[in-house]
Image 1 (cartoon, rainbow, N blue to C red):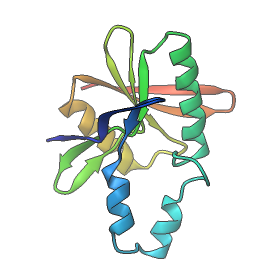
Image 2 (image 1 turned 90 degrees about the horizontal axis):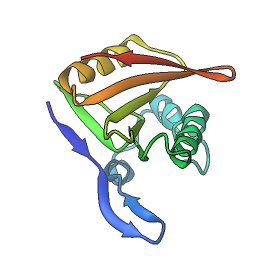
Image 3 (image 1 turned 45 degrees about the vertical axis):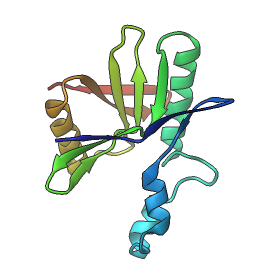
Length: 146
């Protein structure tokens, strides 16, 4: 089982630049079925797949400024689970201790998504896998153990 990392070490005036080769491939790819295309649309002008992801990114940035985490990235890793199945966590955050935490932001859980994160967590104990879901004013956390 492999990991594909899409973070480049290119530096810009604003800091590290993230390169997502999947986006480049998607531009060259054949058009998808109209129903799937509509499902994959992101909020206009946002790099995030949903408003909930954008909100969680804001929370991570506040945590970084407060010193609770060292750094965070949006969709920097991709795990090959086998037989054409992949898992791409929404966020990676580095704790001050050096621990790497992968966050999956969910509005609603589908069984296939739950299975993917469980398989990834058991195959990669070097990461801590956490699913988060917004419940009105607070965030619910569910941790997946290897």
